[in-house]
Length: 623
Image (tube, rainbow, N blue to C red):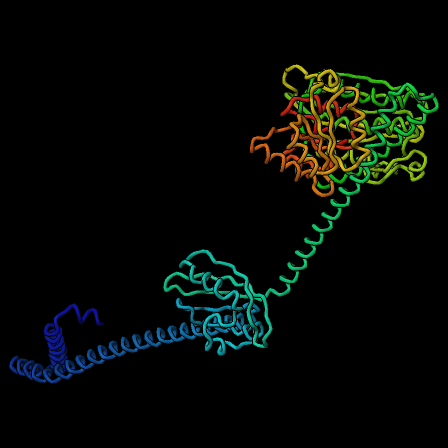
């Protein structure tokens, strides 16, 4: 209806309505006249006129009613539009109200959650202004420090921090950059009850207005554990130092008398006045002293290996020569027991780069054990090399026909102070350290050890190691074999030792060479003698009364800087631990000769050109 009214002019609609009513009224009157059949033409005209006149009010009435109906319809449509709009607005208002209620509900739940977290958080959360004034402190501060948030709010910043830490913490806070990484600081605070507590805080400066956000917690328990660990570490270091001191003193006290026993035994061996029985007794003394020296060396070696103080010293060596020299050293023991000692080599015989002294030590341990536990039959050393690209895999195995080892005892065989059977310690002797030392040596060198054995059939101990091939170069001849010929008879020596027996031993060993030898019994006499006489070589003990050998060496070196002659100084001491050797060299000594001293090593050290005497310190330090 609204569309038709809007598309046709209202005047045309009214005219159309009047005409329709008029024609209907006229037609009705004409029908009535024909029905009575009494109409004349004049009468018919009058009737038409009358009908027309009579239809005018009716048309007007109909027109008015139609207009009223149209207005009513338009009013109803407008009302409906208003009602629809009101309903839409009400619906929108209801939806908006519901959204607002949901948002308020979410906000309330979120605020409640944050408050729940803040109220039950064990850490203290604090928001600071840029000038270090508190804006917010979580309620957990009451449980942590004893203060309420309101009490801290009234206090100046950092008042609760220990005075000794306050300046440092203030500097940390002031140094923070906006948006930068958080900083963690530990410091002490005063609790409300007057006690102290350690606190750890993580602080960062926020972007924007530069406010600070900190999270703090009490770390008393952790600090107590840290203090306990530090005390335990200090005690462990002290125990380790006590152990080192004990080993140093023990070895010094053992090596000092062994120096005289072994040294004079070697001197007496050259005597032609000994009877056969005396020569045999002397050999027993020498063997016993060397056995005792081996025990001392085992203890020292194991201590150094446990401390990780052994570094591989790589040099070219010939594995075949290594095996042959080790067999030659123990051939006498095997011959005395009637045990055959054999060598079987396979594969290439290339020279390799490795720590020959340490490998020899392991091989000698395996060999001596094999001879010790074999009463009849043979001991065979099997040597093999296999190529693996630019490196070589070296395997040396010692097979024996001895007593064998049970399967149950094999897993613990390389543990320290362990022997296959406690009775073997009484029957065959030994400390039970040899195999443990061998295993640790090979591990330090990057190799491995192993054993196969059966009771009553014998054992096979082996080690394997991967080494690089040595470059082609001539093998240097050892100077020990030509030492006597290289000694200059015009050389002047000073022997410094507080032990008269040791001074006499050195003089006796050097007596065949007609050298000019003087002696001193402490560092004071040594410095006086060195300033008085231009010595070529000084053999200096370390532990002496009045003035030790290290101090005496420094004094002599200081005098040399003022124009005095600079002699070669060799440490001649029972202090053979690596750190002790290092202290000797730091004091200005040129080399180290460990006690007990053999004639061969002494002559080799004296005959060595200097600087170069240090080449003899490796073997000496481990003797």
